[in-house]
Image 1: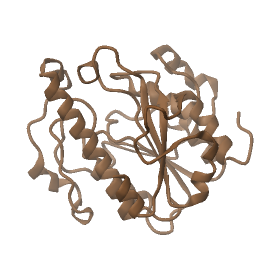
Image 2 (image 1 turned 90 degrees about the vertical axis):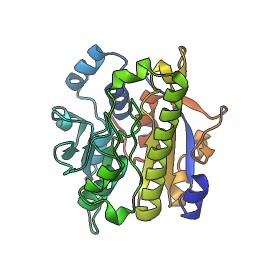
Image 3 (image 1 turned 45 degrees about the vertical axis):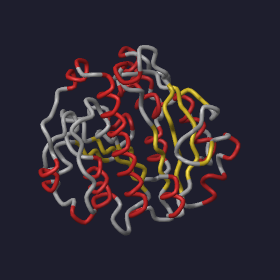
Length: 282
């Protein structure tokens, strides 16, 4: 995958972030990354709105950018969209998907990315900051869709021919761990391959992509002593983007080594804005 990115003129730099959660509770990690506040339990999450904290999306909106959240896993509305600073939210009901579910995943990552491209990144679009939640690597990690040519994605009905029987997430707890790990690996491979294909196809010179895992999977996949560190990468065609983080010590490529830097996830907001933002933040 690194070779594919390099061949497309899209180098990456990678390291690790320590997530506040593992095996679930993804909203805790998302809020930590966006707000720069350590949100490791539901009470802290519930109190975040009252802090008036400026999230990454809110900071981009202050700077005049359009902002969007693309959340195919959200099926009951996003009440905190204004707090987080999103002008627009595309969720499971508004993404227009007409294909089958894949267990938890309401739609394949490829459909999410293609709809994002068509509806928010059309030629002439305003400067845009968007957070996309890719759900194909969510438990129970089977069945998986197949990557299709981008011009055949359409309304998603093309995926009906690749859909197998869905499993409830609790089914992974009663499955052979070796099978679970193989399915998890396959789901990560699909999600990354889809993202790389998207960047190869639609990665124009102005696109900057931050790829981050929100948390490690359940102990049935990791073992009983899970590490909370997740990979994070920045991919960009413009050399100035990666030059701006040269002092971070992040490693070339998408797969950080065991020696790569590790920082808590709540440090990312301030580190990012200090590297790229011209003004102090609150």
